[in-house]
Image 1 (cartoon, rainbow, N blue to C red):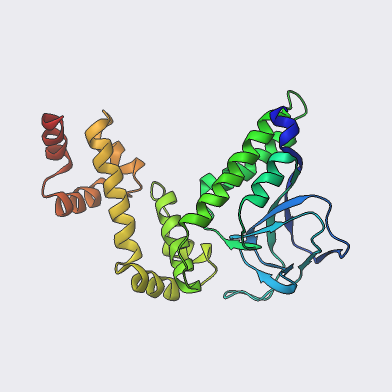
Image 2 (image 1 turned 60 degrees about the vertical axis):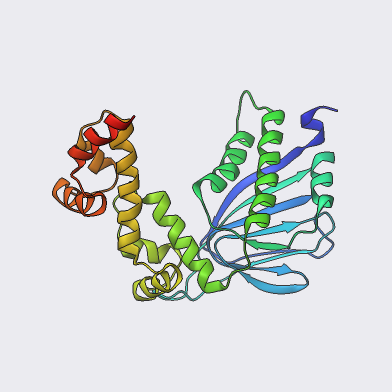
Length: 272
């Protein structure tokens, strides 16, 4: 049987709601559904209970599962109650999906850090389904298989963590993915919908270091690698690693590695 016949992507889309939205299918949905909350909040029927769904929650539904989705005004740490809910949704089926689903028992809802790589799989599926020409069911099927296997890897690698450490992990991941670009503490806190003061204390309690120090550590490791293996000027290294000015970069680089960026380049290339 062909790859496309074994693994169907029936529908793939992204929705963003700023108005109330309710969906009810008490008789059950017809296909498998993967729904990832990417922004804001919603509520859904999960294991028989209407439950809050937060950004980063992935929900898994099988054919004949009842489906209730409610999007109304929600309270956030900053500002008035508002409607703000974004999600990717993939309806799928086929023998491969059925075999994957029955392979193991999975939670109906999984909290997942929203990495660019994981989001990229959903995004690519949506883009592939929207193609007006050269659409390939086989390519969509392959992306879906990768997504399903990535879900299983996340489940197997995911430790049992508290809500606080989950927020801290999401902030840590945000720092790692955005270290090459300028950002503020407010951006890190907003990523998980908490105040700056709470973000600072939560990160420190979870990882034993400040957000600012961790940002610099990640950027310095990036800079060390680029100084060693790329020919780009040192000022350009500092800029592409997220440092606002070379003087500051030079100072903390020397403090970390015991020599200036220029001395480190000479030293590292002598050892290669």
